[in-house]
Amino acid sequence: HNDPDLMAALTEQAGKLWHTSNVFFSAPPLKLAEELVTASRFAHKVFLCNSGTEANEAAIKLVRKWASSQGRPADKRVIVTFRGSFHGRTLAAVTATAQPKYQEGYEPLPGGFRYVDFNDVAALEAAMAAGDVAAVMVEPIQGEGGVMPAAPGFLSRVRALCDQHDALLVLDEIQCGMGRTGTLFAHWQEQVTPDIVTLAKALGGGFPIGAMLAGPKVAETMQFGAHGTTFGGNPLAAAVARVALRKLASPQIAENVARQSAALRAGLEALNTE
Picture 1 (cartoon, one colour):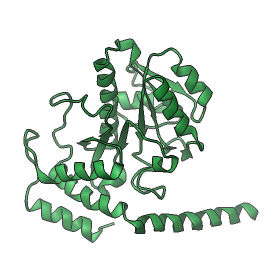
Picture 2 (picture 1 turned 90 degrees about the vertical axis):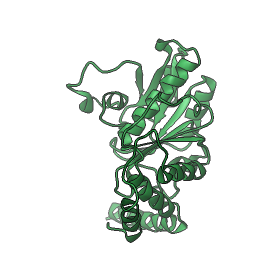
Picture 3 (picture 1 turned 30 degrees about the horizontal axis):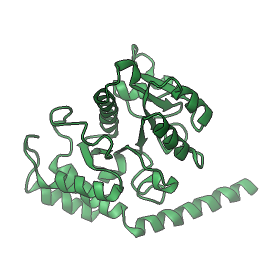
Picture 4 (picture 1 turned 135 degrees about the vertical axis):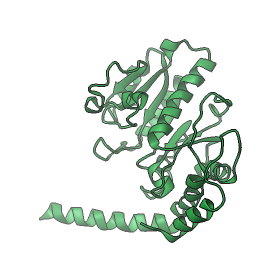
């Protein structure tokens, strides 16, 4: 709380530029996008927004736009998500969220989504068999689903199935990304290369910001005017996020996560033996 480096970035930028029309470029979001591309090891382009839900909405739109650009009809642009997932509360994001308790009362929900059980490779294979799936969207660790990690090897199998069916792999790292698992991106631990990654929460160190990172297969799909935001990636948020990203990517953060993980594991195992 009240990190002095984040505070300094915010106050310095506040004295320069708060906001400008999105027809103009400003330095903080451009530099943040460049730094995210470099840090991610896969992305070619970045869309900055205000929240995780907005990042997931952008990802959903990018999937559909990409499928359209491939000549796929509307009924072959299905996005598969997993029961227990949480992807946000706007209409498309809450539909991607395969938990009825978040959807009740908001029907009719948008079409084009299909749900399968988390960590069930056979169920995913069956869901993709019809050849109408454009993407699989998955959290490496389900947050609202009970902090449930993907089983070892599961993300690799999802990647392989996406390749087999010419579908995109979308990783929602809004809750589990930015150093929280001991690596800057949670999927690094599975050595999986996604097509799209969504980020928020820790990215801004408490300041509202979200990001959608797009890899080479889809990066050129969204052209100017295809999607947009008024306040997303504004100079204040981007200036803070640049400092947060630098800190979260530092070895000290990873080392501290390892120490805290070991302490938590030891404490839980001690409780289990009582």
